[in-house]
Image (cartoon, rainbow, N blue to C red; front, top):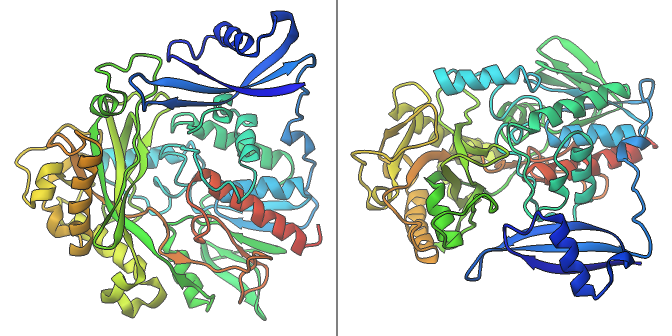
Length: 519
């Protein structure tokens, strides 16, 4: 018989297997010989009380052992001679679509403009150390997509989109720590995820799929309302029985290409703002009410949301023990993002803090039509860059100076390697964004006493929270309504947000492709 129960433990007790077993036996009132086996299936931290505690949900086997579950990869078979499906983008949507297609008996050919996950590191160093932006290989573009080198957070609320468990198990089967199957807010870390991504590629290749790097899609092959393939690097023609478009939220040239080829697009709301960086020690003290969290508690995080002048203001992609990184995809722009290593041991904590941007806010760029949101983003990013010295130094203010609307005379320490420059963010941001952030962060300070401090940096600009464009698709077939055999997927299509939701969307799209192709 299998049974589940919840237990509470102090941080120092949570990883003591013998103690966990003892507590389970005591709660069930069983002798030790009756408990066949146990496993922790959910683990979270509850910091609401006087002292932080761990909440564990434990599954126990009484009188019978757990049945081993076969690996998902054990069901894959070679597909080298099967129907070909082109997948544009090697991010989570693209790679998970490829795995799903192999499982369903189709050959995926993954095409990515960037480099493989290891070669990509040199371009990240170039932007960090020298301010050099490679428009095809950066924090957003390349194998694994934006999430690979910007944190690897796996939390999602998209429980209705697919099997979160399957998505996580595939990561574990490719080398991720099994703890991600248990933790309520799973995280791999930017130092660990690249190896997992490389292992996924090896699986795709092992079963007969293909992965093509430094292959920039520059045109589409369309005849009689149906996509037949793509043109790569202006010269190479690739044909397939279907095309999955999983290019991520920053591939702006793809949106312009689709518009040029009369592929229907839709404008959608998005968010834009700044990244705010505190000391991790402060966030730990505010959340745990401890001067030293010790070795057993994870770096504390937060989630804040409020309303300001009719718009949502909220924290986004919070990185405890993390780093702020340059995420520009073109020279001449400043974009920042956040990441954490697996240990989350940086002395800093950072979070995007953004304002919802609705379509009516884009009036100054109305001449851009459905791509007005891209023009809005670009205008802010370029304004940030023009203020600086031509490098990737990011404009910043102390949090209190940001609210007061004055340039900071000095700035706190930062994790941002290119460096910060004191700047009037209150002038560089659109007034509608600044005024709402000004009100929102003060409200955050009332909700989280100590958050509003002169010792925090406000860094511009956090502009790539999601795509301002949607590539529409039929809700049943997942095909584009005006171009047969074209299957938009993931964040770039406007149907996901984050690694796991994009991965599940890739799986769903692959299932739809299989149905379309008769699999």
